[in-house]
Amino acid sequence: MKNKKNKRVAFIYDFDGTLAKGNIQENSFLPEIEMSKKDFWNETKELAKKHNMNEILAYMFLMLKKARENGNVSINKNSIKKHGETVQYFSGVEEYFDRINQYAKGKGIKLEHYIISSGTKEMIEGCSIYKHFKYVFASSYMYDADDIPQWPALAIDYTAKTQFLFRINKGIENAWDNTEINKYIPEEDRPLPFSRMVYLGDGSTDIPAMKMINYQGGNSIAVYPPNTKKAKERIKENILKGNRSTYIAKADYRENSELYLILKSIIDNISSLDKIANLKTTNLNKN
Image 1 (tube, rainbow, N blue to C red):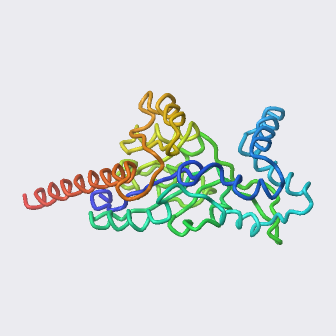
Image 2 (image 1 turned 45 degrees about the vertical axis):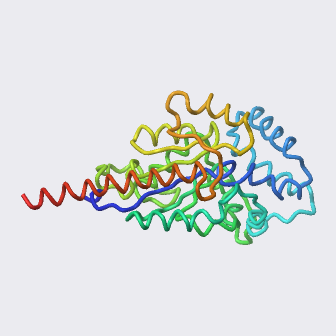
Image 3 (image 1 turned 90 degrees about the vertical axis):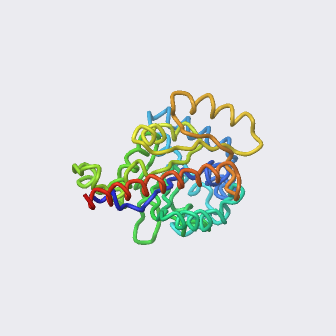
């Protein structure tokens, strides 16, 4: 059976508020269209309420509308992507991936990193850490021949995140294939079992994904900005209750931080279980 020899482990991240501070649109896109983040998100909520609209679709529509109304803002795939260059990360993020990959390798683990985010995929593609992800599932646009955005291609909200966990579980690296995602595949034949997944998120939009990972035998970590007691209390109140998250920790990715030590311990545990499984297989073969 495939899983007995499976060395792959997936770390799956939300983006905004998990790896990066705030929402990705707030760093340079909103200043460019001359809008405060408060006004933008308030108008997004009003638009969604007025039209009984998905809030992710509302913000995606509003981004294009406001950019075009401004008149001085270039709005194409490349200009959207460039906003990713201004992302502000939590401490240690840019050095974290190589370090944790090396640690996992020493434990016999092939570590892979994925994003499942409601944020703008094109901006994530412009980030310095984009190269570390095997695949990014995030809200994105459809473009015409001139790379001008025409329509939302993908909008990822609360419960939609669970669909993309199943896509990772079954080895489907796209958002369009609905045949493979619904095909029955025995758990032992799936490329990445849920028990070998870790989900990191920061808010209520991550609760369905966290709960599903926990239920399926994986691990989830709720992170919060350092030096924000209020955010920590919110995480405790809304996420820890009902086993929605396995752990909570500050969004600090530096070596020897609490979060980094938790991630190392999860790798250690999976590695130990792999060794036990291998011993059992060896003994069965001998007999």
